[in-house]
Amino acid sequence: MPLRNRLKEYRARLGVNQQELGSRVGASRQTISLIERGDYSPSVTLALKIARVCGVTVEDIFSYEEETK
Image 1 (spheres, rainbow, N blue to C red):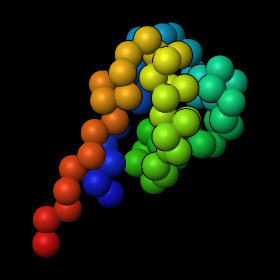
Image 2: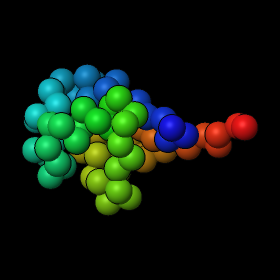
Image 3: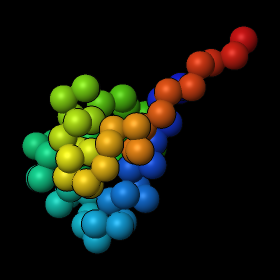
Image 4: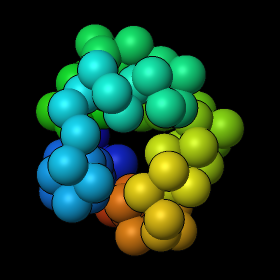
């Protein structure tokens, strides 16, 4: 998947678990887990909420890499 993320790292910096982060951004614990594993790409709105809660930009947490063939 070309969308990479450092969400687990930033969540750890906040000192919260997946459930707490989910509550803060209006998502489920399962959604946070899927994002951290790279199995789910968040909507722009959710990515912005996550970045705001973490106190960083979206680009600090998420990066897009083109797939090579």
